[in-house]
Image 1 (cartoon, rainbow, N blue to C red):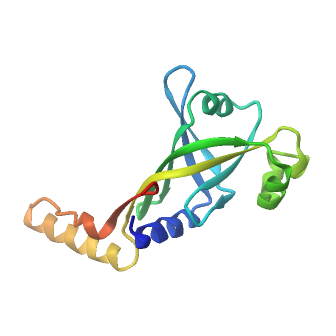
Image 2: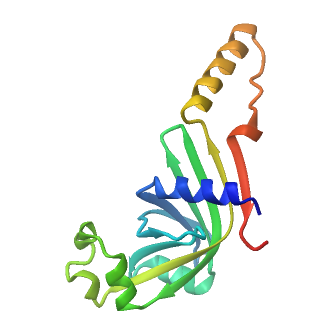
Length: 166
């Protein structure tokens, strides 16, 4: 596992406020929903708040394998696979609590409906075209367009993968 890629994935994850949490539904379909990211751990594990009676809780109880997808306009993308765990821990909820969660949990971190989801990162991929990489990408795209040629993506410079179990 490349420490540079882990660090970069963590930095990218920390730049997102929300992520799409994809679960395997009890109806055998995949379900995706936006979730506020409560914390990104140094290991790239993620924390979310949810309600005890939500469909995602039943889906995670059935199948802990989840996919987290993040996108920032057209410049940055992260896909992370991991194992979800439902955590009922008032101290941890208080530690992760942000005032903006009040709209979902009016009684605060002690709300009896509150449950935490911890996603233990297994592997992740990222794609980015920020800063100089964005300028370089646009330049290469313009050249390809002008020549009527296919864009050569240069994916190695914009793409990285990590397996956290190594």
